[in-house]
Image 1 (spheres, each protein chain N blue to C red):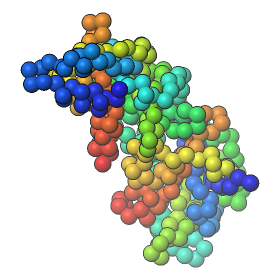
Image 2: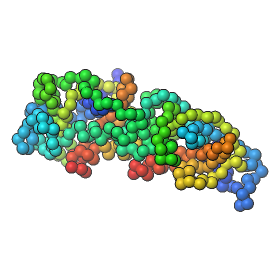
Image 3: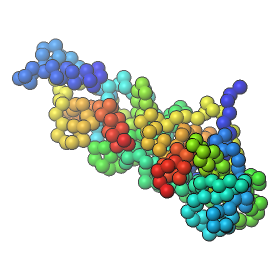
Image 4: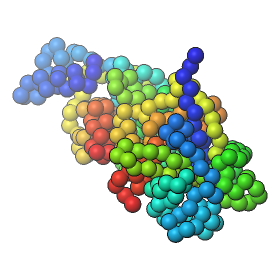
Length: 165
Length: 189
């Protein structure tokens, strides 16, 4: 289930805050990864591959959350440092999630890849309590007592387009 | 047969700047160029090549720009994740092409040469290089566009496309006229 589908499902929540019977039982598969202490999730279908040990080539005129690009199978991919976006701190990473996008080549740096989890839609919240979460996440959920942010790739890319505009 | 691209390669910090040989109609040794104040390019290079405005080569005047500041714009030192690597003292050990070396390739002399090109609108541009270079040939298929998300911004710096060298180095293809930092690019002086 894509993030947009999750949002659609959540927006269908009744005014009293309850999911319908069918939705409450539905689950969403999400790929969970960490960037420093932050936990993020993406639908597995947007991830093309996970690569490790690649050099990041810095490029000019990029905002701080774009440390450069990587060479994945001969193709340059724009790298995002999500921790800069969320905490304004650099994060050294050695793994990259290469995304499956139609018209761009993008990778998210990550410290660790955690697991693919099944999350009940009823446990996913659109509540975001910080500005960054609100801008770059489509939803949140709890995993073993920790908050996991479901990234909105389109919003992250929109931020870059805005900053480079 | 694969289509080839002939480039001049300049080592700069930990990457290479490539300029397409096909963009320039002549490569003139520095000794054959003179600035408006009458100095030769080689003489000017000895004193650090201050701002260049116009030079004369082959009997014509050209608006001049220095390659090195354009390359420096591509260096992005603040975006580096790892510790910066030291600048190479010698660009790949490359010796300049003797025909491009106004100083005859001798000793410690500063190397200068000017790439002459004609632009639309009747303007002429001389890109002045003060460092050694290699003439290389690559397959067109080995070049890559910058990812779409960065293309517009990097295009304003004159960065056309890139290539990954087999040793892992990044090579950036520079088109000086499209850089807004180049006089002929039209924005900054």
